[in-house]
Length: 398
Image (cartoon, rainbow, N blue to C red; front, side, top):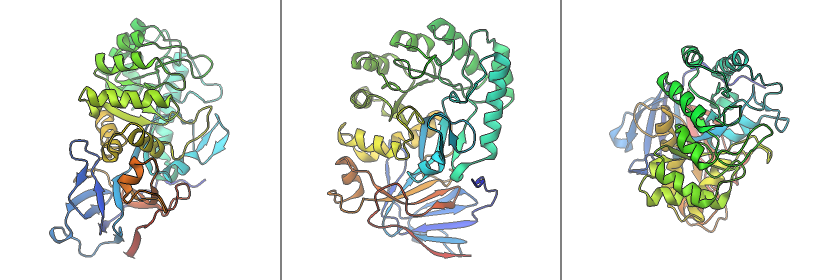
């Protein structure tokens, strides 16, 4: 298992002949541009080729009229250490997910670690260790934001202050530990927020032994930053209660692959009706009892677009710019100054859709032809998606 956390720089990268450029910005999801210029992993130019400095690149890529989209972000995963999951005893799941276009993952707690410590000293030590480990090791180049402690009874404000000072910026799902009451959770959410730590709350029925039901009243009282898997992980609250959460809370609406699909569609449609589509973010909630889903984010995009009747270019924003904005990330959007994380896609071979967006809206997932992270090519044609009709090619490198 190679350490893909390369310290190498991309140099100057030019991506030309882009057929469709998805921005990640839900207010303007498609850009009128055919070229991206990158320098040392950061976007320095977006527009028409004639208007940009494209001379003497270190790497020149011909997109061959395929689609370029910001790298997909999985807002809800449960890593442990390395590229292994004890939940399914599977190696290489993160690198495999990169082949599904995911370039960033966000931990909702390292809850599956065998023997996970539940004492306060131990849970803090685990969070700090996980944060450090994934900061130093990036399987397949994927940015795994880990170190999300599962909070337990007895924690006080100084514990959150200590975690923040050590570099921990996330809480694991509230409800997976002993803190399940709304008033207890609300106090810890306030402490976390005060010290710059973002919180997520479990929503719905129990997912693993030790977790429990977190109903709408607890979610509203706790007021965590992310309504985690609002469509259940796996068991959902009623559609009525989920829609009530969308209406009464102003927090992020996280929809996951490992949840209730009917309620997923209802939550996304509720956000549109409430005119707050920017609140919707996507995750897989994997690894889980249902396994690892390398194409889980693409499948969610297809599901919400086709059965939810939501334009595909908007749903791609749920998994890119929306998540980046809510999670305070420098990726997820195609604009100058952002990280050069891209997924190159085209309609799958023999799909009935005439274009990539049309094929997704008809229920097919696209084919991935290349993934770049920090301006570095991490894979070519995906081994997991259906074959793309066209794929980008490296024209020249030096």
